[in-house]
Amino acid sequence: MIQRKTLNPEHAKGWQFDEARRVIERFGGTEPSRPVLFETGYGPSGLPHIGTFGEVVRTTFIRRALEQLTGWQTRLVCFSDDMDGLRKVPDNVPNGDSLVPHLGLPLTKIPDPFGTHDSFGEHNNAQLRSFLDGFGFEYEFVSSSAEYASGKFNEGLLRLLKNYDAVMEVMLPTLGEERQKTYSPILPLSPTSGHVLQVPIEITDKQRGLVRFTDEDGKQVETCILDGGAKLQWKPDWGMRWAMLEVDYEMSGKDLIPSAQLSTKICRILGSKPPCIFHYELFLDEEGGKISKSKGNGLSVEEWLRYAPASSLAWFMYGKPKAAKRLHFGVIPRIVEEWSDALAKWEEQDQAQRIRSPLWSIYGGEDPPADDCPSISYSLLLTLAATVGDPNEQVLSGFVARHGNFAESELRPMDKQLIVHALAYYKDFVAPNQKRRHPSRMEAQALQELIDLLDKLPPDSDARTIQNTVYEVGKHYEFASLRDWFRACYEILFGQSEGPRLGSFFHLYGREESLALLKDALKGG
Image (cartoon, rainbow, N blue to C red; front, side, top):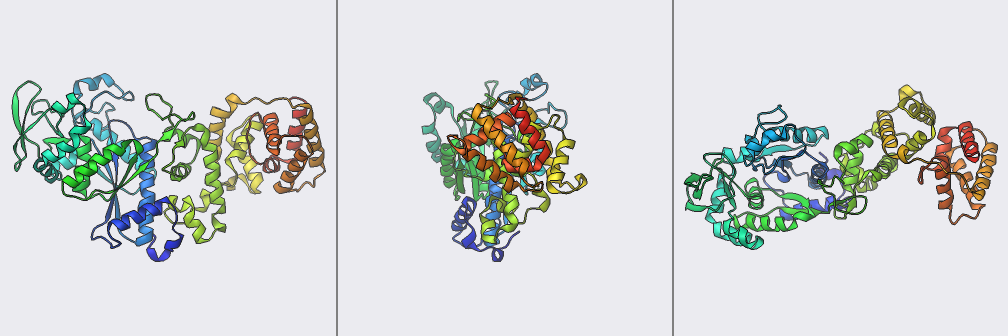
């Protein structure tokens, strides 16, 4: 942990430090007698997704910022609402029909269709923990079923019974007329079927936690809601959980602002101080529409990790969480470039600059491992793959080694990883759309001049010298802008509208190979 004495607060600028200061203000600037508790929530009826990663990594950024500013002790709880009743069979489970007879049961009472755990809820909880562990998050896992069954939420349930009318006054105005007639914030478990019931209740003993309701078979029953006999509707549950766990900070999507406002009121009704809340903007698809699971227009963590390193995804999550961001496959190369460029500049920066970098949060205030910095850019790898006849790991590794003037056996682990990522991205997204075009008359003249000038350069010319040559050629011709000249080169040479710095590419690709590429383009090859 980075202690306060190692961090100049004046350098601590960024949204994560702003949020950490909100937590400090929550305690009046005085260190609390217990660790500050951060929470993230998870609905285990489905598998972890990119939103889950985003919440945990962003919360971790704020948690570490608080530790770095104050030296205070902190905890992060990942809470699974696994006592929720299963309402419909998920699309992505095997033997889905086998779950139909168990609809309505808590997730932890439903047989695991995957056959690996005692229940469906436990299976998905294990997936969540494996997911979080894979990224190295430090957290404590908490199960809703376990908390209710152990009696840890009994006090919260009794407080709700005591303030039942006040809770109903908060909830009823948010419901439709028909729903108001049957609504109860308490969901008792049927003594006969075990189902989580959404039925009206009558409180018969507030001190002992007894309620009466009509069971599924039409019979009136009285039951105790304590020790796992009931759970709360999710909005009252959220507020009660904040109160019982003493949660100090939680973030959620912008779409949950109304829900968080209700839960905040309920937390206060139960006699506790609600946490600091942060609402982030939702992700958008390539067309600017809201990402939807049913539409399948999103991007999963697994898909991102096929094309880019995990820390580049953390970089993406860091940037402007309160601004809507487009999340699609097309953003990956740009994000990887931003991330790798920042790594390359790290050693040159002073502490103030480092603290302002997203890398400071991604690596918890520590120096990024030297092996995490690639020695070649992602865009260069993509362009190489688009240029060579048979792109594969061995071919690209050879170019990278030559570019760095070292043996292939000395390739950094991140170089090897990035080559695999770039090849996957090239084959899936670049190659299917790759189509080189013929140069126009003016473009052909410019390319011929470029060939002549590059041929006259000393064999050991560096990338900057080559780039300046390309730049000067473009200025000799009537392109609308130099951007149009470079775009023409990309389209003619590589069959794509964007690419890396041409000087860097020609230097990497090799003098003779680059001249041959240019000559081949003039022939329409």
